[in-house]
Amino acid sequence: ICQFLRRSVYSSLTINFLASAIASLECHLILIGVKYLEWRVKLYLELAQVYEECGSLNAASKTVEMAMRKVQDLKDLEESDPPLPDYVAKIFEKTQRLLKVQDVKYKLQVIIIYFNVILK
Image (cartoon, rainbow, N blue to C red; front, side, top):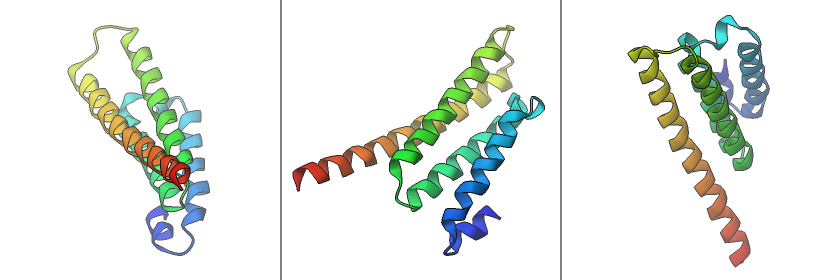
């Protein structure tokens, strides 16, 4: 549904749909686990991309920051019961790397826009 809405003129409606999906995932204990982490991160990144397409880079950056916090919270929780299995550590590493790249991307875009406004 989100991919269809993003390609249409109703891309802003996708924001509500994705935000609701993320909120419902965060509210269910079963879906908070590592098993669904990549799926949750994908939804966060989709939401950030929709914000970017709508021209709201600050919201996209905050979405990625929130996703990074959620992943770190889950990682801290999983590490409280050592040892952390290799596949779980790889999932955390992959998702954190992906989120850091997107975080840098959006922060640089925000800074570039900010400096363009100042220089004008």
